[in-house]
Length: 197
Image 1 (cartoon, one colour):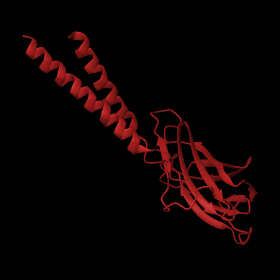
Image 2 (image 1 turned 180 degrees about the vertical axis):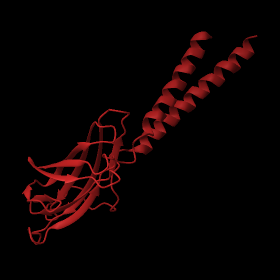
Image 3 (image 1 turned 60 degrees about the vertical axis):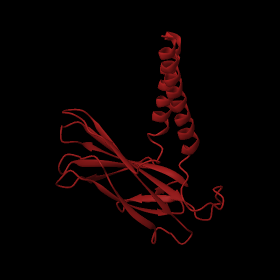
Image 4 (image 1 turned 90 degrees about the horizontal axis):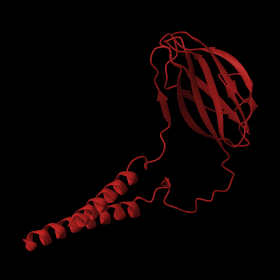
């Protein structure tokens, strides 16, 4: 009887574990993240954007946008931006915020009106480094996805909704089946034990 109860508990644990594994983090990636530091510790954050460029986007007419850092620098801190290996100075605002503006052409990126640096189609990483309020280093990472609209896509003719890569229906069905099986084994074991007396 102890083996049956142990089996029932094992099946129940596996079912609940399957359900917990299937649920978190399946909705897709967020566009920004951050980690806050305690006194004297470095902090980092990231923000991302996607920009479509065409042959009409030149250095005098780039595709433009802006990104705000999700972590806070020290008030009016000097910040160094690194874009394609080149660096340029800027500063955080009076509240420690930092927003960059970018321009993208076919394929190069300019940050805050600086020189256009070589880029590639796909994700390009821009970093901003400076002091945070605790006096340690703060690093903001900006991911700019340069998209060539002339490129062919392998996505097919779908419904227009993004596929996050998670097939939840199968995972949820399997987790539910394991939970139900575990519950059935527990009920069967209890009824059988009650009838043995």
